[in-house]
Amino acid sequence: MTAFDLPTLESRLASYASASDSTEPGKRAAVAAILRPGRTSGAGAEILLVRRAEHPSDPWSGHMALPGGRHDASDRDLEETAVRETHEEVGLDLARCGQRLARLPDHPAIVRGLRVGLVIAPFVFALREDAALSPNEEIAEALWTPLAPLARGEGAGTFDYDHEGTVFHLPCLDVGGRRVWGLTYQMLQNLFSVLRAEE
Image (cartoon, rainbow, N blue to C red; front, side, top):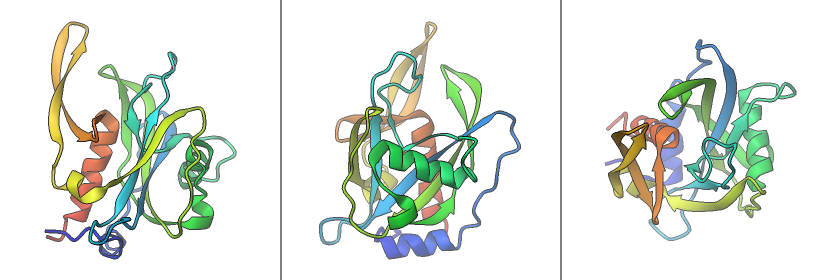
């Protein structure tokens, strides 16, 4: 079983051949999977999750997610998008207190079963020093949660999603009563697969 202390995870990710830009057409966005050492002895690394604020024009309104957002023309690349959006959304300056560990495969954004012409690049960072979170108005909640239980499948389940009268049984993770599903669930599963790759 993989150890989930941050140095071990960093070693695993260092040997991972980071993904490159998807060739799929569409606009681009990026998110940050941010890891930090656990706050209790033997707890392993923690990952930052956010709950998006309720907003009628946001297709991911109220969802659990990784901090991030759409690429801006002023961004040098998608990594800079993830860094900028993280700073805007939760107040963490990854350029100053973070270290990029890997880039995971891109994901096409899907809303109500349809691709929406947006491709999301997930980046993994390690937090190098304590930094307070200061969520902006786009974020209803930001929380650190232990990574190991999620990777072991604790809290795994399904929920019924009704799409135009058809009910889909979608996989999810329960994080303290909060449901993680959809794109964020898929990105986390990719991360867990990389971390287990050498077992």
